Length: 257
Image 1 (cartoon, helix red, strand yellow):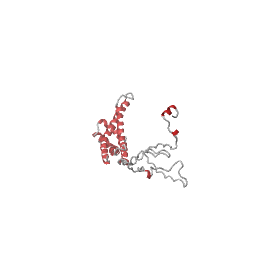
Image 2 (image 1 turned 135 degrees about the vertical axis):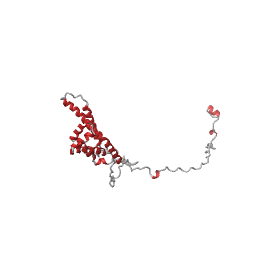
Image 3 (image 1 turned 45 degrees about the vertical axis):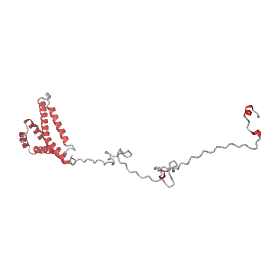
Image 4 (image 1 turned 135 degrees about the horizontal axis):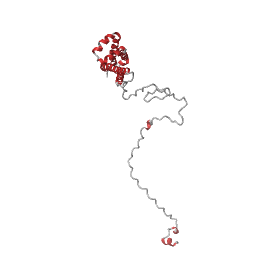
């Protein structure tokens, strides 16, 4: 909602609320006055009337409405319009009370509201309420539109968390930006990495990125011929007749023929 539209709505609220507040304040005061008069007339022996509760509820409703008018999120014109009206009426009673009694009371108010109207005017309650509303309307922050925080861009860092900063040594809240870390100093000369800690590995070496190529496929060689069978041993020509292999009868009966 724009600031101009907010102020226009505030003017409309002020014009509607001003007569309602004046009527509720005057009628509530009249109900309490009647209840108190009965108690005084009977010396405290009669207190069964419901007028005091009606008057008390009306005054409480007026107080709630005035509290909402001075809220920070409502346009200041919503409280400035009734504030100027009540302040002018209170100054009228202060500067010329005779004119205030003769003209408004007899022309615009019913007879049962004349006495509470005069009571509120003579005791300066209209002036107090009016100055209170005007003072609440001149606060500079109420005239400015409430700024809406921009949403973080897509893919950007999240907004900083609200609230007081964490104490020293306490963990940062979730989503808080991390402070930049100081670069680590290199180890002193002559002192390398521990023996159990090898050199840093950042992936495979440049030569091991691909597997070694396979050897080219050679044409199939013709089927090799089976090796020649072993030749039986030749008989020696120098052997005698006893060296011949024994016959079948000899092997059966165990002797030479």
